[in-house]
Length: 103
Image 1 (cartoon, rainbow, N blue to C red):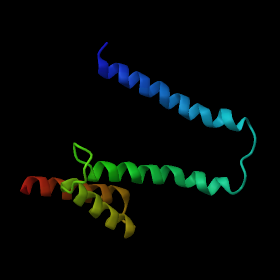
Image 2 (image 1 turned 180 degrees about the horizontal axis):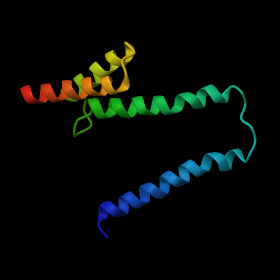
Image 3 (image 1 turned 180 degrees about the vertical axis):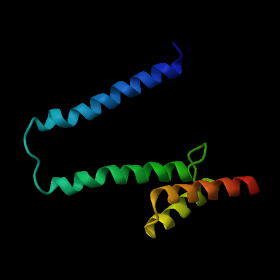
């Protein structure tokens, strides 16, 4: 078994344990009313953070602006203008591809 498959296996088990920890911690009790809106914002916030890290990071952990950054910016504008998801993704991918082709 290669090192990559070991890492994938460990990450899969860790992800399962993290997902199982929530229901086990709550134990069938109902959450307070104030917790529900907060929990609804966790996934979008995490997705936004991961997208920004991927769009702006370089190899040594430094800040970097390239075609990916422009694609994310175009997607943000399209999403703010309430464009359909497929169009938003197509615009972002097209922008990044065009800038990479020109560079």
